[in-house]
Amino acid sequence: MKRFISTCREEETLGMLHVDETAYVCVYANRLWNDSGIDVRWGQRYTFRVPNGEKWTDGWRICRADGYPSSRPMRPWECLRRIPGAKWLELIGAIGRSPKSAFVIGQGLSDLPILFPGRLYFFANDLRWMYWNNGGLIPLRITRTK
Image (tube, rainbow, N blue to C red; front, top):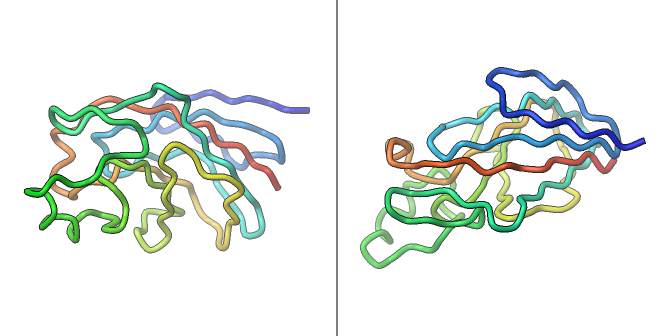
């Protein structure tokens, strides 16, 4: 039986999802770390989806969860983004609060294998000191597939 959990409340702990269980989590663009409240274990698999039409902002720039590429004046700063290889404001996931465990989600990511246990966190890819000018939130659908 599929069960859907929806939350955008602060500090809510959802625990571990069962296979075919789905949770909706709000990811705020102006937070360094968005705690999903979801714990994962080795061997599980997850799919992540952002509904079409959802957007957030980087200063005056509006974009979707797949972010936007650098303009010429921004290129020198790319290497200082939290995830240098991902686009500006691209939706990123991580296990624990470690950039070493980060994975790019963008608009969606299918069947991600979990290689170590921890808590799922999310963020919009930006410079660590520039979150003050980000705005909005993106709802993220998380489904455990295995």
